[in-house]
Image (tube, rainbow, N blue to C red; front, side, top):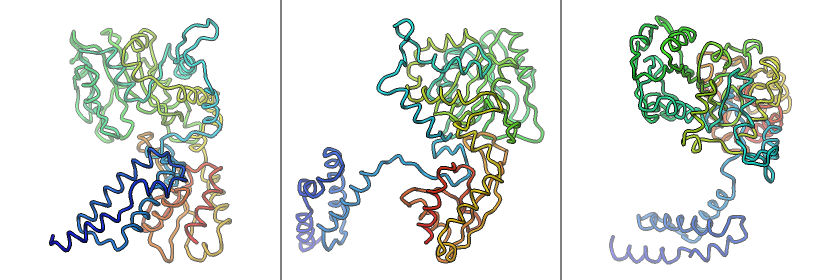
Length: 465
């Protein structure tokens, strides 16, 4: 850099507004002063770096104030916001998995205002157990002796294995060494649980003799992992739970099952693809099962451990339990969700996940017709909009090979490409997440609750006008 350029750079740097000047200009914003000052310092460092790297900025003051204005708008807007899920995937991991109804959310929060009997026994006036608010409900739905809730199924599996199998061998089929989202691998989980994994069988075939031949004096349990996010088909063989139970019982070993997902609802009687109910695994001889609370069950993020009382007692005495336990809001919401299961086929509409799963194409088509009837004439004229039949996935590794009937709205703009539509809907004041297929933009209605339809109509009219 020559002397002339160095002088110009120094002049530009001198004209960058100070932190105090910027704060005076934006002090009326709703941003806390400490947060604003920290953010401005970071922004000014980036502006100075741009100048030093030779970026030509004609009016450095205007440029900086414009940057700050956009920054303040961004940080004044809540990061976590409601969105419209137009993907059709009800248990969408990126959008929070199981949707929870307003009634359940409000009830879950109000039960804790300003205090609650989370760990206080109002009958005795002594310290209570937070788990008791949901354990009796889980016990009846799972048809088990006892249960405990933790913060997700990954921690449930670790807690189960560490409590029952620490420093001992655990037998598992090679076909069940799964990986789910976020690099959650069963071999790694078993290692973290401080137990030794003994693999048996092959990827596609495992026989009962494979398990029996692997049993030694160091064996502490047989682990069965439900491959909930994929299915092996063709030349395969998987041992039935009853057979595994008989083998485990013969050698005085516990049979541990990681379901991943699992349901309290009889999906077939609700007109949905078959999913084995959680209670069936207990009735077939599982000693302990674990499953997620925020998948087909329809609750908040959590993991449930259910089964024999003696094992649950050991699990609750593990020091990891305190680290993995649930907070008051999740326990409160889960209690309300569990009370929606009157029977396996009679479930309250307060359970939004099940309600959305149950809606058929006829119901969804009515919503689609209503949406199109409310679109502005200019929107209809500028775009080709159609109602089509679609098939969607449940999401979060649940019902992995099943397609669920749905209805979608297909949009082809006469002036914009599909990726432009995708971004426009995404950047709308109320974000809508759809998908692109065959150069068309789709809004699937399966995962959109009825009370979001008016917001969806407003969103479409605003973006497509």
